[in-house]
Image (tube, rainbow, N blue to C red; front, side, top):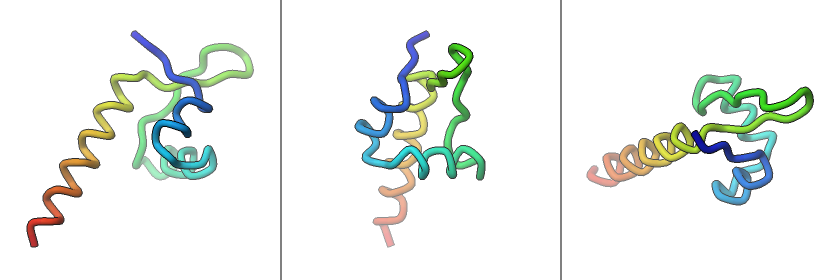
Length: 64
């Protein structure tokens, strides 16, 4: 299992930390896991699955 930290995640997605955490709270983005007392990260497999789902949704919406 590979973990991606917040800084790398924001760079990869082009979203701010606040936006990512807001989407986590709303259930629209995978929840982070606690990796130490003061650090969180995301499972890279969960993030890649979310990206694929977003791409599929965008493709479906473009078929109008």
